Image (cartoon, one colour):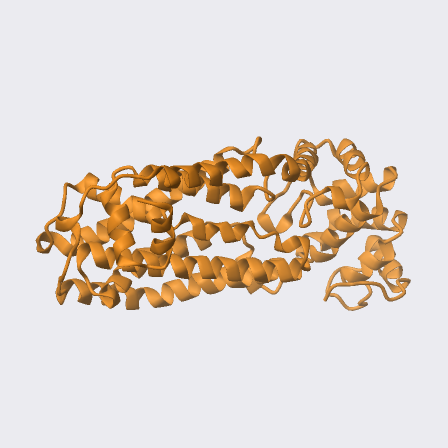
Amino acid sequence: MKVSTLFSYLAGRREAILEIAGDPKAVRIGMLLVLSAAFAREYDAEYLPAKPWLLALPWAMSLVASFLVFAVFRLAARKRVPRPPYWRSYRSFLALFWMTAPLAWLYAVPYERFLTPYGATVANLWSLAVVAAWRVLLITQAASVLFGFGRIRSFFLVMLPADVMAVAAAVLSPKPIIDIMGGLSHSPEDALLSSVTLSVILLGVYSFPVWLAGAVLAVVFAQVRGAAWATLAAGRTSRSAWALAWATVLIWILVLPFTQSEQRRAAKANGLLEEGRIPEALDFLSAYPRERFPPLFDPRPRLWEGETTPDLLDVMEALVERPTAPWVSEAYVRKVLLQRDERLWLGEYRGRLARLLPKLPDGPRIAAGLGYADPDVGVEHDEDFMVLHELAKSAEGGDVPN
């Protein structure tokens, strides 16, 4: 297997598929490429010394995904195709699965550094869609060559487990799907992510019968021609292939010192906030300009991800007591304006708001944004409400999210 083999494989060439499947050491090359793809995804997204397991996560997920797809094809082929022993044939299939990892290098493009947050979210979603579609087509081609099924039958056999895994991943993701369905507020980019997540779940559930029926028909009426298992010739891995694989990992080790400083600051700030050391966290955040943190940095609590510590109003009360950088104050004002749930209308929280907001320069804007300017809101007009109501009426325009 040579360097050119990898790029030929990414183009779906049959000869490259056979060359990789026949090389017993190709799986090790693939393992390095998966690691490089993990670096590409996380190099400017997370502080890796604090979360080294993120680099191993793609290995674990790809092992599960590749095994499910392989098991479906192995079961579908049954005795129709002469095959090597189970685990040896799985090793060949896993090598082909891992050799798709270079497609994930597309995730390394730092869209958020030259696009708006919403534009970066759109670009990242398109990157994810392109990589996912390309991988499905590559694995379909590889399985078709190895097992001898036609491409259409192979496509249904790949999509059946892929659909299940996509729905499971979407369900387990920390997106506020119920919030979106209930019409509660989120930033435009968070709302987009939630909408896409919900769409993936619905599309996956509704399309599952199609993939299941297609897979069953593919097995029942399978016509196996030219299965490659019996003709695989043992190959050798070239030095150039090893050099490329190691280079794709080592280059990230050289890049990390220039990208992880922002992530380190973000991780420290969020760690202080999670521990309840709010004043210390605010001082730390205010000691740096916004540009010294990641472009999409959102200090805790990230309400849409279900984080409850620290309490948002605890942070707002701490903002009153100490000088804080404008960008930090605005970040938390925005959180309150987006937190339009019933909790902020309950007696306890309404009382805290009534004591807090008059002390904040943005208090009138926040009160208006939470809807207290409306005289008919269906809640008891107690003293706290009237304080917030008068404060909201004093707001002169301002940036209040819809």
